[in-house]
Structure formats: C-alpha cells, structure tokens
Amino acid sequence: MALQSDNAYAQIQRSKTQGPAAKPTTSPKEQSLPPKIEITKPDATSEWCIGSTQTITWRSTSISNTNLKIELLGSDRKPFKQIAATVPNSGSYSWTLTPSQFVFGQGFFHVKISTLDGTLAGESPRFSLGKELTLEAPKSQHTWRKGSTYDIRWFQGCATTATQLKIELLNSSKQSVVTIAGGVPIRSGGNHYGNIHKWTVPPDTPSGKYWMRVTAADNQFMSESSFTIEDPLVTGPISQGITIIKPDAASEWCLGSTQTITWQGTSPPSTNLKIELLGSDRKLFKQIANNIPNSGSYSWTLSPSQFVFGQGFFHVRVSTQDGSSFGESLWFSLGKELTLEAPKSQHTGRKGSAYDIRWFQGCATTAPHLKIELLNSSKQPIATIASGISIRSGGNHYGNLYKWTVPTEISSGTYWIRITTNDNQFISESSFTVADRS
Image 1 (cartoon, rainbow, N blue to C red):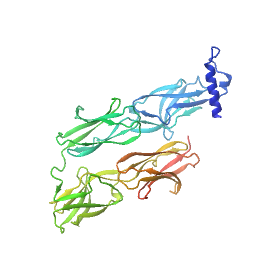
Image 2 (cartoon, rainbow, N blue to C red):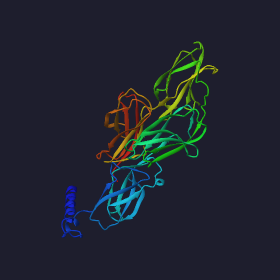
Image 3 (cartoon, one colour):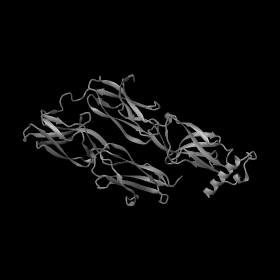
Image 4 (cartoon, helix red, strand yellow):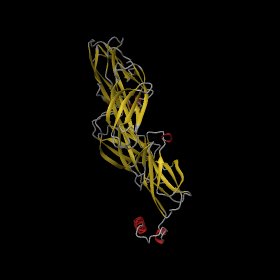
C-alpha cells in the first residue's frame, strides 16, 4: 500500500507541472491519499555539529495548509527539547544548534514533526549531534611534568569537511607560545575516539598555567583547556643501583593477568627488596611486595578489584628497604582488555532501530577476534550477533563499534550484551532494555 501511495503521489506531482491547464487546487485523487509526514533530513547518516545551522526537510501529503511543530527526541524517543512551536508546512526549517543547549560531546536523537494537535506525526531515523572537537586531555586538573611524555587527546562528535587540525600551546593569557603540531589528520566522520598526539613537555618550559588548543584547518572548530606545567617530581636519576627491565615503555599489561617484573642490579642476592607501583606523577599508588629476595624477578597478579578504571599509566619502583638503592621503570599502561561502553543499564533499545555496540581496549592481547552475543535477563545466550570481529593488537583504543539493529520480533524486557575474545580469556557484559517503538 505504501508503494501505491508513493506512485500516486508522484503522478499527482507530475500532473501539476504539465501545461497551463494545471490548477493549484487539490485534485480528487490527491484528496484520496492518506495524510502523511515523512522526514527526509536528518537521516541515519546525519552527523550534525553543535554550533552549526542545519536544514530539517520533510514531505507531507494532504496537509498543505496545516501548521506544524518540530521537536527533538532522545534516543529513547522521549522529548528532549522543542525546536519550533509552530511553523508553516513549507517542507523545510532552518535550525541553529545553539551550543549552550547541548552540554555533551555527542548524543543520538530523532526529529519529530507533527500537527499542532498531535494527531499526525513523522519521525526521523536516529542521527547524531556532537561537538566537532572536544579536547579530552589535558584538562584543568592535570599537571604535566617537564621532560615527560603525555597524550594530547581529542574526540570528534560530528562530520566535518576539514581534513587536518593544528595543536598549539598557549600561555595563561591564551597567547600562542608554540605550535606543537600542524597538519594532524582529522577523520572524515563523527563518533571517533582515540585521536592522540604524543608530546614531550620541553624541559626548559617555565612552570605555571598554560592552555592547549586544537583547531580545525578551516578554523571552523576549536577546543581548548587549561592545565599546569611543573618541574618533575624526581629531579635526579630514576635508577641508582637497580635497573628495571620489565615493564618497559611498550608494556600494556591487562588487569586480571599475571605479569613478571624483572630487574638487575649490583646488590647481593641476600638483599631484601620492596616493590611499589607509582602513578604517572611518580607518587605512591600501592605496594606490590615487601621484603622479597633480590632474585631479579617477581610474579605479580593484577587483581581487578584494586584497579577500578579502563586504563591507567604507572611506574614500577624496586628498591632496598632503606631506599639507598632503587630503580624505576619507564611509563607503562595497565588496563582492562575489554570494557563494554554501550549499551549500558540505563539504555533503552527500540525494536527495529539501529544502535552502536561500543567497547574499549586498555591493554594488549594475543586474541585476534571477539564475538558479540545477545543474552536474556538470566544471562542465557539467545543469539550470536557477530563473531570473528577483529581486535586491535595494542591497548588504549577507543572507537571500536559494531552497528546492530534490534530485532522486531523479540519480546520487550531486560537483555544483556556480552563481548568475549575468541580465546575466552576476556569478557565484558552489560544489561539494557528492549522496548517497542513509541
């Protein structure tokens, strides 16, 4: 029936353009078409930038003289904000996405257009609104130490025509000090985590407050944040009599795994040592072992209950009991192999709608693939959504996603999504709700 209606609609539109005999009044055939509102923009591919002006477009049947209202719905199809209270049924509306009304990096929404009495409505597919650039690191609470290397990180929440950005260091008055990098590639679409540029703080930089700024090459988008630069906490050598071999700068150790800390030194084997874990600022985070023999190695199990994060950066320190002889490792990472980021327990998936199943990797793994399963409320598998999905070889990876359409035939209720590496060593899961389309 929908196809017949569309063909009839097309015939009517053609007849209106043929010759001087065409009349602007509504024909009997057009009057027979059922009232309809169909949104053409935004569509499922739209990635609109907060701060931009976009055109919402639609087609309507048999309601040409009716005023309409336009609303923005959340991904759960509940009202988020009113875009326009009453507009003519002209087929388009220009909408400016005021940044003060969207205090997030990225969100997923639907546009709803309806008659003023609500008796007729049309909804767009799910699409995304986001900030073109959101600087994730450094932040105002961060202190970066001279001579140390850090990740400048940013996130893209919408599509842009700019292909590159530049990164600048600014002083406390936001005057440019130096261009850290230019011509850094920008990915073509939105929803991208994991954009990083490694930067070593120059040792001769004066201590104090600074700003980091990232700017798209077309100067249309910018993000900046303040942070502090200070002297290193350890000004002398980080090795005095003991040299740490593992972990090294390439180490990405998984929470829940057992790793071997290794070292060498000049102290006799009878010397008892202690091993500590230091944060990226070289302050004590936790004690790993105390009063152990100087054997050159120590087996350490990374209990997940002691590390409640996706990924962190640390140093290992091995020292004598009196601290007269010590060694510290280079900066390395500890993380979860798999962290399911979406869906979460507060999320509702509507039948027939498409969503991103997203996960994060915080450490290296030998498993090359993972599978995604749908479980019922008792965590019994219902279906394998996908298998053989490639896992990146290293950690610190955002932006892993798989697009999934909620089946229309499943019952409403609580479900679980589970991701598992193909060697069954790592698993992450989360509950969510399935509901009918509203």
